[in-house]
Length: 238
Length: 236
Image 1 (cartoon, each protein chain N blue to C red):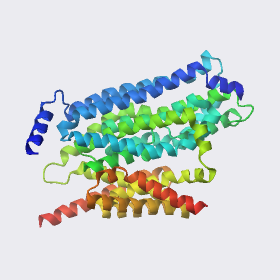
Image 2 (image 1 turned 45 degrees about the horizontal axis):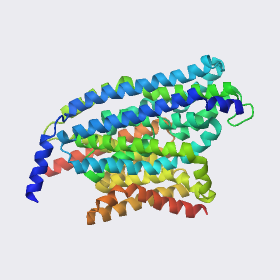
Image 3 (image 1 turned 120 degrees about the vertical axis):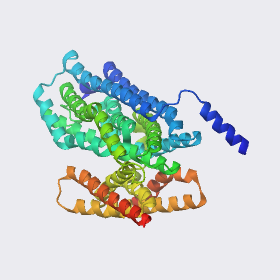
Image 4 (image 1 turned 30 degrees about the vertical axis):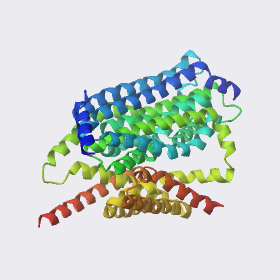
């Protein structure tokens, strides 16, 4: 275990992890810059641009905190660099920790066991890195084709008809979250109550924000809903 | 006031180097592919380095065994997730969110919230730019918080009482419920239809990986139908 940890925190592994995270940061900055440059041609004001950035930043706080506990448990087994690299790219910490224990099992040991050696650690790294490649390869090779398909749909929905792309996009989004929320509802009573509390809180918050025209309340709406639902969940597990 | 507004508009028109939507897409493809290819190469180099430079190669058999198990667990999402999220994420959003991860828990909610605040519909040009801005900012904040967790995580966790730590498991269901309600707010019928579809699909014995895509397809079909009905009513 100690030897594996020495490898896991060795200088080259840190370098790989920091470069990967650096690329993620670089990409985010590039896309923000591109979007800001494009904003005028789609009719966005500067206030709207600032608001979009602010809302995005606010809404990352809750989810990032959510993966905290899993990330920390990953640190104890795989050390900091790999946790940073794998949680910062693609994988959710939850999938990565499941995959890490899978890989340790395939080598014939367990995460955190005394016989978790350098080879076992290498098996875990191989599995996590190869596993993440699936999404990246599909995106690199096929996103352009998706774009062409989208343009065709957009061409079809000419003037006077339904804006097909807008309907499909928002309906697809509702479908995604309806399925995810239903999945949570099926997990049990407490989870159902949490989902419902959050949904009702969101409705009330948006209702008030729209009526009084309070933009900042809208910006914090998801964060506030999560807090309300967490409090209810907390009280139910006491 | 009126003068100020006019001046502001003039200033915005005068700003140099604005990009058109097509140019934006072109540049997004370029930078998106470049950054993701770099991560792909690094993801191969690190395990190769550990195996053959450091000399800790475990043999191919455990690697293949573990990889096949991983692929069986999430492999279907490699294809299904990019396709089903694309209409919502758009070109730039797809590159952004699949590199930074946490798509359903962070990127999509952040994009949706920003579109809601600004009043831009998903699938429109304005909606896509709004989503890119929001997801870019979300990605940066996520990395920032992750870095803090990496640096001080164990210490931070020790500050939170254990009884409260257990309620962290409710963050994910809370996100899903809240985001769904956010959409149902403007299109209540669509939200109710989608939730009904979702619950039926989750009750029926359908393989778990097919549930997401089936729910999306059925919801999209019903919503298009509802929208067409509405337009026909307006005509008469």
